[in-house]
Amino acid sequence: MPQYKVAIVGAGPAGYFAAQALQNLQTADLSFSIDMIERLPTPWGLVRSGVAPDHPKIKTVSKVFEKVATADGFNLYGNVELGIDISIDVLIAKYDAVVIATGSANGKKLGIPGEDLLGSISAAQFVPWYNGHPDFADFDPKLDCDTAVVIGAGNVAMDVARMLALEPSELDETDTALHAIDALHKSNIRKVVISARRGPEHAAFTSPELRDLPKLEHTNVLMQPIDITAAIERAGAEPEKEVRNNLEAMRVISELEQGKHDRTLEFQFLCIPKEFRGNGKVEEVVFTTSAGEEKIIKCGLVITAIGYEAEPLEGIPYEKGKVLNDEGRVSDNIYVVGWAKRGPSGVIGTNKSDAADDFAKRP
Ligand code: NAP
Image (cartoon, rainbow, N blue to C red; front, side):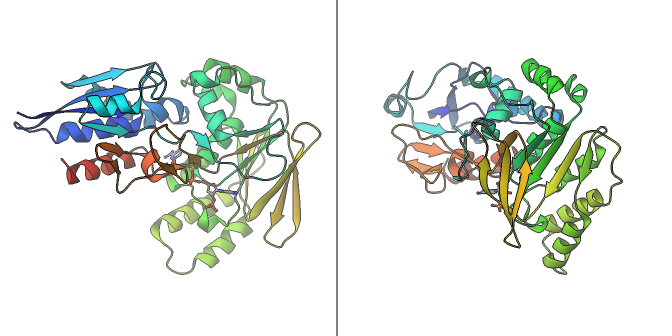
């Protein structure tokens, strides 16, 4: 019976769902022996270091990964870094196929003046910090100011803003890193502004995350009714289902009764970030509004959450933040899956259908 030896590089969701897709293809006449290598000592990638800890249900997908890991023919090798501990050439020589599943770890930059000031950080630093990623154990986000701005209108921006605006005792029971719980308890931040460059009808938030916001027990959530009614009008009579659901969830938020709490999470739309200003550290963010006017928010922390790019790997072709590939195939026996393949889009489960489709095409 033919047995194919496959190396998977990266033990995140994309790697595990690729392994599961291969395991599901096994028959009496075909089997796979899978060696997964991972730079960190621990597996699960973004499920461990990317999911917001106040949303623990999302992490239950790790049960699926445990099942994959305990199946015959699967081995995980932690603390093994491609390009440092083993080269791509060795993997190519020793395995029938190599699957790159290294994700997109680097935060995209805005490329505007002041972005390198102290107090300007990326969600690609802040999120792994509060999740206890070892690379960020010494990271020190500046939480000693009263206002923070989060730039971006996606679910990562929402996670980051919520983590900053929550009453920190709500995190005590979660698996938030202890250093982050401690720092968030001491945080002076009471106002968090999420800033979108386009209107509500174009926001990349998903509606379940929006619908969760009114459930925050200790935080005012503010959206201007005028922003939402104007967006509903612009979206027309038959917007796509996702847009319709999002706008409905935002309408509910915009009509919430306000002002009870001393913590506020506020949304602004149609504001393009122009510059971060300050004397050695961020003191204000300057935006250009849709009317072409300047709008300034005084703040001591600004977090960009505007997407991610894959870290280039030696010996693997790379273009525009992704591994160069043709429907997942990189070259003869090299494949790529997940965010490294398609860019940073989709939820964790997207990797399941993606990997199943990819491998079913080429057993
Ligand atoms: P995303 O969904 O692609 O959102 C990125 C946001 O950044 C967009 O609003 C985009 O605005 C904005 N942006 C990009 N460039 C910008 C610029 N130069 N200036 C201002 N804004 C800019 O990315 P993400 O939030 O990083 O999330 C990545 C993926 O993970 C998404 O598929 C997301 O749904 C998923 N995720 C899911 C969950 C969950 O299910 N709970 C949690 C976290 C992440 P434009 O649209 O105008 O470009």
